[in-house]
Image (cartoon, rainbow, N blue to C red; front, side):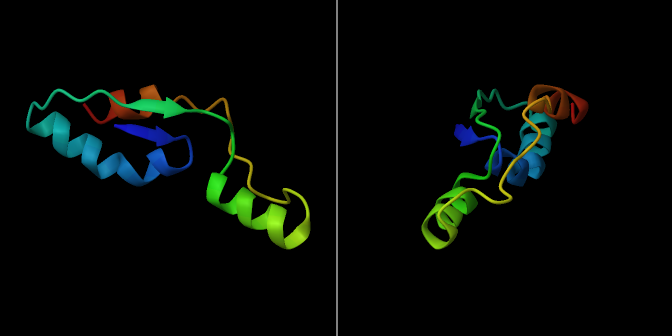
Length: 68
């Protein structure tokens, strides 16, 4: 699976399901520190990125491991 750093948060339940069923999963996370869909809207509507930042230091791998 390939996901952005914002959208990967929507898949936490799927991580849990994969772990419970012993499914091998590889997830590549593109970490640019923003909600891409929001940023694109804000660029078009307001001419700039207003409030789409995500903490780039959040470790998504640690979140996934915590579900194991």
